[in-house]
Image 1: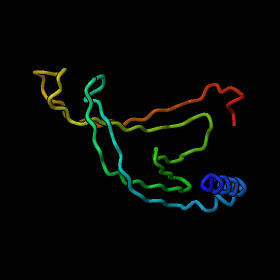
Image 2: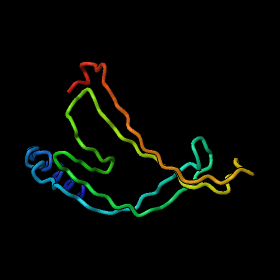
Image 3: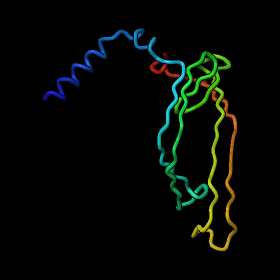
Image 4: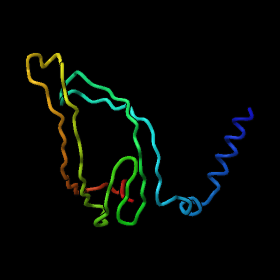
Length: 129
């Protein structure tokens, strides 16, 4: 019973703080580390996979132009609700001893990078901010 009362008290206290007070306490930089489980298919469309357990450093930077968070790195070249320019990165690991590729040469690792331009042509009024 004590745990739930303390939890409710902490939640109520957090909700009672005004948003500007919370926003002022966010640092410009954050650095940390963690462990990630990453699961790759051997190649696109493969039903065989390879899993890795890797140490992952993370950096969060909240600058005016450049922003880095746990999901992406982005530079705000221009501000628009209708147009967004993304650059995506993908890759694959080397493949050896794949059952479906019996007798075929091993696959080298790959790295892909490319832009995409997203243009919002229509947005319902219920989703406009």
